[in-house]
Image (tube, rainbow, N blue to C red; front, side):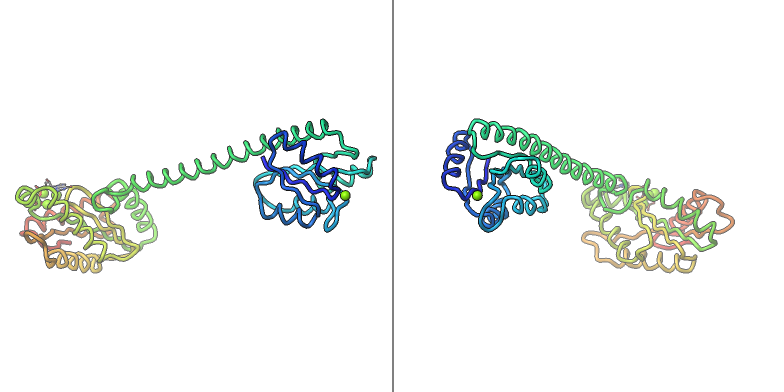
Length: 309
Ligand code: GH3
Ligand code: MG
Ligand code: MG
Ligand code: MG
Ligand code: MG
C-alpha cells in the first residue's frame, strides 16, 4: 500500500517514515501542502495520507478539503497530525473531512495502530468497490448476451432475415392496426421454383447460396417500413404496411424480374408470387395469409415465374 506523508518538520517526518516503512508501506514524503496536493493528483493510487496541520503552501485542513472534492471510486483515508488539542480543533478537522488525529508529541506505537485501522478500512472499501465493478461488468455481459439471444430468436440464421415466428408476431399487430385504421395492408408470398431439382443437381450448399441471394434481392427492393421474413425452406414473405394491391403487385413484379434477371452462377432461378390485400373478406390474419397462399398456388399452376393477386 502507498502512503503520502506531508510534514514540514524534518524530525517528525523522519520518525514517521521510519515507523511506517516497518509496516512495509511505500512512502511518498513531502514537506509542503501544495506539493502534497500535486503528488496526490498525479498518483491516484495513494489512498492513505498522514498530514501535518500547519505547513507551507497549503495547510493540512485545506489539503483535506480539496482531496474530498475529487471524485473517484476509491476512498482516501486522512490522518491529521497536530500540536493543537481540544474539541474545537478536532471539530474543525472533522468538518474538513479528516478521519483521524494524531497529536504531537507522537507516540509511534499509536501511530502504527492508527495506520493499521486505516488499512483495514481501506481494504474493506477497496474490496467493495472491486466487487461492485465486477458485478457491473457481469451485468453488462449479461445484457449483451440477452440482446444477442433476443436477436437470434427473431432471425433466420442462413439469410439474416426475420424468421417465421417473428413475422407472425408483427403480422398480427400490423393486421390489427390496418383493420382499425382502415389503411391498406398487403402481403406477398414467394416461393423459389423447382428448388428441389436445383438442390438435387447442384447440392445443398449451392441451394443455400441461392436462398442468400434471393434474400439480398428482397432487401434491395423494399422500403424501410416493410418487413421481409423467411417463411419456410425456399419460401419468403414480404409485409407491406400502408400499401394497396397495385403497389403490392408492382413490387412483386419487380422482385420477380430481379430474381429471374440476376446472373446466377450455375442455372437460372425464378420464383412464383402470391399477393393478397386486406379487405373485409379477410377477417383474420390467417385468412389473409391463406389468400396469399392460394394466389401463390395459382402462379405455380400457371407455369411459375409469375405474379398472381
Ligand atoms: P416448386 O416449383 O413447386 O416450388 O418446386 P420446388 O422443388 O421448389 O418445391 P418443393 O417443395 O418440392 O421443394 C422445396 C425444396 O427446397 C426441397 C428442399 O430440399 C429445399 N430446401 C428447403 N429448405 C432449404 C434450405 O435451407 N437449403 C437448401 N439448400 N434447400 C432447402
Ligand atoms: Mg508543521
Ligand atoms: Mg415451397
Ligand atoms: Mg412446392
Ligand atoms: Mg419451390
